[in-house]
Length: 267
Image 1 (cartoon, one colour):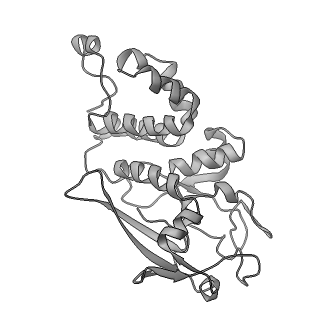
Image 2: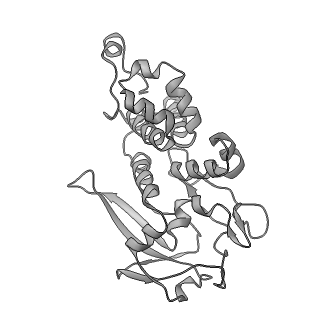
Image 3: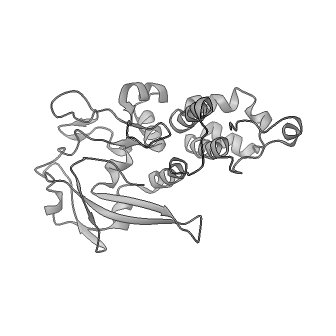
């Protein structure tokens, strides 16, 4: 996974273990990078932001996002909608900085680093990381004296939960399996969108339909996904892998298997 920011950024391999960078109000370019962004939002980004703003997912999506229209995306994606105006500023930036700083998106958190990931061919559960520097002409942060290792930077910026969920989600986005064609592909894309971006709708799908009568879900998991949105998002990602690609991430109840084809899988 790589983070998307300015289209004019120059990417440089991070050849050493350390880099120099700092960002604070005294840096001359402070908040210059918070405008005219092509900033893709991940499900965990939206979870954090909509809770910070005390909105439900639908409200946040309507007010702050727009579809990513990049060619090659077979599944619907969202990006942060910039405000109108000459500079097209981020909706959350102020003269004093970011007003959602503690819950800012992962692409903002990791800057000025970029991160690319791939699954290990020998160990399926291992994620291989590669980091690079994102250099923008206006940025004076690289002229600051503070030095970081990648580990120190990602820890300081609170990236661990973001990278955990982003890696799980990118396994779906980059999956090579077919999502079907025609109406089937449309339904699967709608399922992906709901489970990824609208946790309130996904919760209703789980608890207000026959879902729990169709799938084996233990009591502890039910309790956790009722109370904890991060647990619900992780459960939603497992569901999408089953529903779209038929992966064995969910267990259908035996009585359901005996009576009909397994639910939720369009083909």
